[in-house]
Length: 320
Image (cartoon, rainbow, N blue to C red; front, side, top):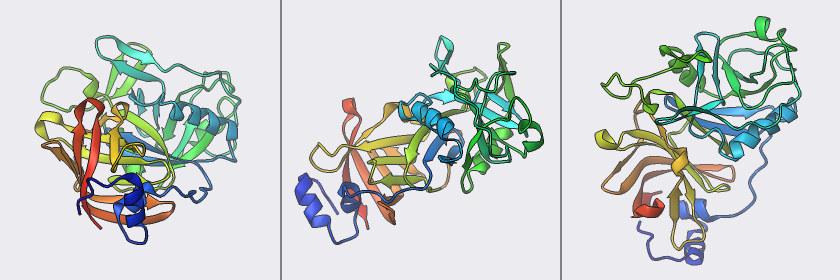
């Protein structure tokens, strides 16, 4: 079903009352309230979603979201893996030919320890001997660490948990070998994306973080409220596989998305059913559309690149 040539208002009028992508993309009604804030984190080994404990640790949640919302975590990497214990991130990004660059930090926050450090929870990292020293760094508990971390340094503040099957991603990273980059980062998990032994940014387990409205484990998701399309994409042997985010551009005619360049996370895996990119076409076998809490799955969605300089993709076709 080709949609080229329709302007915004015409597409909206014609899409009302029928299942279809344009209706899901362009309706601008208020979203159903979410009890707790959700953040979807894309990593080299797949995506997982965090449910944040807004009421339990409000200062900590707001601090974490400040970093997420300004893109401070995008392009960072997990810099500490203590296998079977914790996986830590939020501190550094790797700049080619320069090395690790620390994430600019906000002032330290007050400790809000209330919830237990059990497997699958996310907690703030902090300085030894100073309960109120947390800034940007956080960690995922890979095991039940309550007997240890609940009683150390005023207790480590748990402010969320991993949803669904997201711990499968953590468990995959947990199996990686670690590498010492100086004395500060002595347990960096690494993977190889090619046959070369040369250490590059592609060997690090990088990540991207976005606030979302609904939990989903689907490989491709679109949310009408934010206009965000998140997908795992296989670009073949020459380009590699990536997790990418695209943003709907409602000010442009038709149904147009812009790829967010800073959202690219190189994948070490190629999950079955992921989208593909070839011949300037992004083909999504199944796109889960969240239209203000109403979910549908659209098949064989095709987006064509129409402006390479601006990373713009226009909707060409789909099957409802």
